[in-house]
Length: 67
Image (cartoon, rainbow, N blue to C red):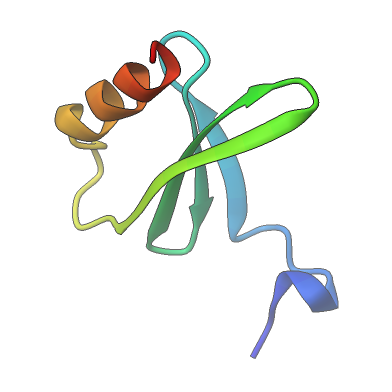
């Protein structure tokens, strides 16, 4: 099994959405997060079943940021 621990960073990357919301992509798993220095806030994770991130997931993350 190839993992980040062994140096596999090809299967892991991030994607930016509107505002501070970002998505950490690890194979077919997604973690929505945002950074307000010096803290990283993980909002929610889910297993992605399509190419497009569900709009309600992004909206939820934006709601959390604005609390």
